[in-house]
Length: 358
View 1 (cartoon, helix red, strand yellow):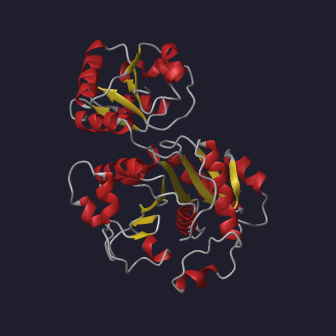
View 2 (cartoon, rainbow, N blue to C red; view 1 turned 135 degrees about the horizontal axis):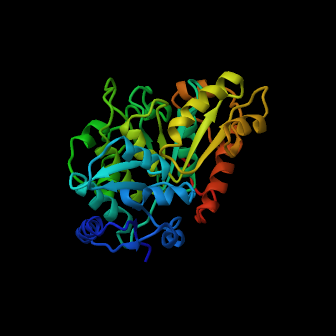
């Protein structure tokens, strides 16, 4: 059984964490030193680092990964946040106030007999680079494969991801209804209330609503979605709020779309400065331009996820209510297919054959 990993020498803190894990119905792997943690670091679903062990762990240079949490019983101060950054943690949790959060974290990653959906976060390195359209196209392409897919709008000022897939008039729950609910969301109930188009489900904002999603609601929805969907595509804002950070923590991979010119690269670099504090795996998708992919990815120190080609008459397709064209005959569809092929194989998913239509 793959269990959460705790790294601490603080006996009192460990007692608290063991009690919290018992409340979540799970067991922990415990390492009293970074050396003991090394075999579990990459495979544990979530890593909890005690503030007492943070400096020693940071000195070992552990590889970046998502879902690392720094936990303390001594209060939070600037030095605590320094340790958080040093170990690559995505959040600082202070006990006992954060006990409910930890119960949910432990329970969500260890529930038996449920699938764990893959999460792709998409963000634009600059305005107008096409991140929202790519998010929608990728989700539609995944649904064509009969992957149960959730397209999740995390940008309250983005104009509505449902508009891109021609779903703005489709009945179903929007963010305001889910925010009003308390506690964990049942995966079946989530699927039942969302607008759906075959295997594609969409969670968007109500028209005219610009309030950010509370981080607790984003966390609850994403953990439910990971138990009920094969793939979750999250369209992120460039200016990250607390809810967007929750999505990044849970991302299998994060892709940033980059315009291939000097200003585009500089803007993307600024966005990356924030992304790297929360996301483990980040890759660049480059738009066509005069500057080569290798130059852009080298300047950003990122691996490339490919060049996203221009799609003829894309705006016309969307404005006419047809959504992004993702058939294998279109440049956009071919790119999404190639991206999914590589992504699914890399993450151990064998559903790589297109078997349906959205």
